[in-house]
Length: 308
Image (cartoon, rainbow, N blue to C red; front, top):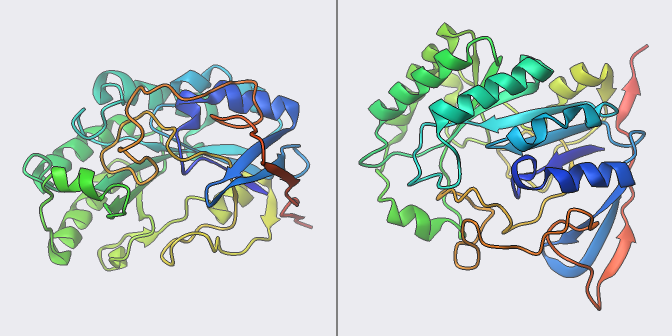
């Protein structure tokens, strides 16, 4: 089993104590977002968890506790963009804080286990293509030698982020403009020893030298584990997504990064810094087992095949 930690919220930033406690206990609960009274119990023993994939904008609260993950292969998807507080309200200053955190994490676990994400890319009156080229160039130079890979995508509109994106007055960039921009930042990445890839992108960027990547990456996981991984495509993701199947452990509407483009937080119900019922000792992330809940053990297994 591959553990996704998490597409729905920033666990390394806000809930790392909870997650490490769950590893020690050997299980956690996940509430089904489509059926609130259905809870799955997930076995977290190293025998069935083949790899942990973290998503984060700030892993600093977790860095000093990474030794507690010694029984598990893992890597990080680390989003680091050029946006200011108007777009990413809860993220610390990029140059002063987040670039050094990125460098520190890569120095601790190795650059091959820290994937730089510069996404999603949106254009408006402030965040023009020229602005992004400059910001991307500065970050790429700072991360040279600290990562092997950069993943990009252009912003997508969902029901949960539609109003927030409308307020940003996005520019209607055409495909030709996007292709030209992508080719430019690919060259900048390569000049700094970083391979550019794209994530779940409808626009075919292979024509400008950018191949598709996978967040839950079979090849990287096989390298980290030293085993072949027998897994199919994740059927819960979009058609353009190349991820293999994984088990998601996050909870929607619990992230406090305050990103205006986020699809995992409904701004009508959740604000930056809003208190959530969080207990680091609870099997559930941000919640309690309620009357009427049904808890069932999810059948999970290792996907590894030993290489002879």
